[in-house]
Length: 121
Image 1 (cartoon, one colour):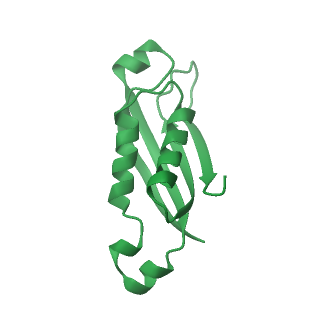
Image 2 (image 1 turned 180 degrees about the vertical axis):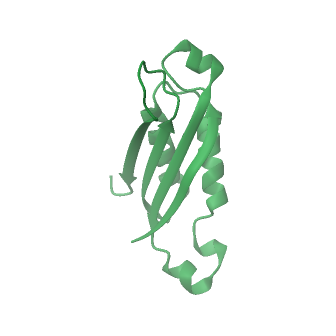
């Protein structure tokens, strides 16, 4: 199966359990991997035969910026489901959401969740 990766999309959103996360917001990073049969696009070299990356970016942007979630697990799951719903050629999708400045007492780079779903589920 062929794959399309969109890496390190960065958005500002208002997700988190703590009230200051919901009012001040924070930076969120998102990676997407989509599995699909890309043979038609390889042969035709036409955008209409593949998944439009711009459309996927806009879907993720809307998901991160237009609604508040307590958990990045819920955000990642919503993005994954919307990809499967809106792009019928996608067989499976993996969504990684990173929260670089998670409010944890300690030193860490980021908190990240990975959600993977397939059309068969």
